[in-house]
Image (cartoon, rainbow, N blue to C red):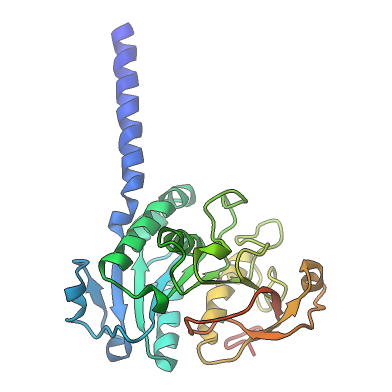
Length: 292
């Protein structure tokens, strides 16, 4: 009997060790695809992590590099990626990298959360290996992708020029966790669209240098559920590539909630890697794209 118990415990320990090792290697399944104006419809997969590989692509080191990281249940070809990539390249010159971590993003929310640190670790290693200039890099993450961008920036000592967090996921990302924060890049912008209510997906409190609360940050015009409100964040970001969506600074969250923000105006989103500003802003929008 004792032998059976010891064997069971040994198997359990080995199983847990394999699981932990698997989580630590989660990011090894990331894939990276490059798009530019020259190949807006033809993806270039980046496989070898060798800077010389980029010479065979339309990559231009003098242009900003934008990395887009999807949310839980997303893939490299769904939701945020096609629209945002196309809007960026239609109106701006840039290198747009799509980060696909769908293997873990589609394995259940808790498993996806557990994989986030490794996804970020491998993304930061990718940036370093390809010698992407951090001072000309903009990381854009939606939902869990926002926290991936935050941890990536942290791993790179906050040297990334800009991070935009699109309605960062709230569940399991309370204070004291590795969630996105203002110190993760030289400038951290957060766009909140579903941070309130009983079933909110996003976080309703300020996290960055600048926090935009779209229509107050919880309920979006034209939306009947939280998923629609959550998705509005990347739709707003996509619209901002060609449309000036402005927010007004609030003195506090009470002013935001009461729609009494009358301070200086600041543009929501946009592509510039150098952006300035601080504080809480409320931006009121219409119900459909491009929202102004």
